Image (cartoon, rainbow, N blue to C red; front, top):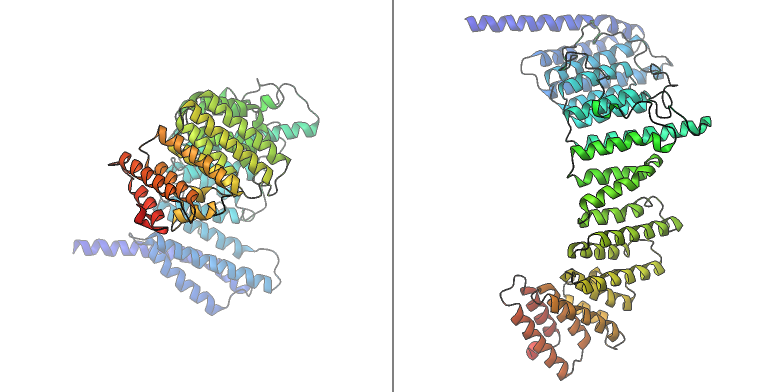
Length: 567
């Protein structure tokens, strides 16, 4: 009996709250009916549906889907009012439009209070407010969201981007990013966002100074007075805030229990500045591009100090420098930092070489910019090899040069030069004793492809996905002996690799396939005898070696094509 009495009390309280919310809808519904936007029967149906959803969202175990279905009902009603208003020739928005938008915000607010940790729900609310250009409402939403989700990187970056792009408030965006880094110091995405923000801000400073005819002088990077100070921070786009009150719903309810952050202050968009970058923001910096990018450089150094082993962080900063003109003064410093800290990393060397070409990806046709980028890429590759040569690095460099030759739109003359460069790298690796088995395989494939004028040498490698790789080699070799010179060079490369790596199965497999290709369709007895001796020699060397099965498949498959009885 006591439990039943408690349940009845809860149900009565819930019914009172629902009745209070429903009564607050009366003025707006009467206004909608008076304007001719809805009939009396339609208003009754809408009231019944709203009441049903109010009971659903007020129950103790309300789900996220209950709120989303309720929101969908209100958004559909908003779209219906818009269509009917247009049909009736009502160009200006009236109280019903603002009332229904306040109601949608009210539902979002209750859902966010019930499911505080649901980042996707907060993002949906932010999306709706941005579509309606509700800047005042957005400020409160971001404040609440960041108070309950301080470790949500997408929320921090989106709030900072909104402050910077939509409100032209660089100071608030900077403070937001600094506060985000306090709570998430190990976030690569946040450091990259902060670095990119400072670069874009520096570029805007430079453009404004250029437009004003200011070449230099003190105070060029003096906060936001130059870049954004002339823009009124309170100047906002005209949106749904015009005509709305500060209440969360038509009944004047306010939901602000998350509006206080963990520091006891308001959780708005003006957190305290970050102390370790605070000194680089002041007006002690001089004028010019070097001064305006000094803060970005300071941010990069702070990011490296916080995450010294993160290669992708430094590469991301380097890519950001290529996207913004203001990043040119610090680009060389970042490259030097990468080479000093990760000089032996093949991934870093390839990434540094790829950057110049990636920046020209927007231009489809090959031009002088691509040629200059390719020269810079090769110089970067040579610098990496000169600084810290290794077998792994040489292998990666050869593979990268070979991949460049397969780019679409590459002029034939450039393809020839790049293949010569790849051959030079292979020879240098062999001379230094740092050539891996894959380098020897690519060396042989490059010789063969150069004679055939093939654009892609991947089909010549042992791991090519042909049904019968040995048959493909014989078809490329031809039966007229026109490519005997190329075959001999390829065989020489494989034999040199076999001396250095006698137990490598894939290299031995490639060597056998080359011999099969040289024999042609009508091999002589001496060719068969030489092939048989080589096959037994390789099979003996690879006995017990993992991967030796591919050699047997290649030899038997090739022999079977012309009568496997010789083996």
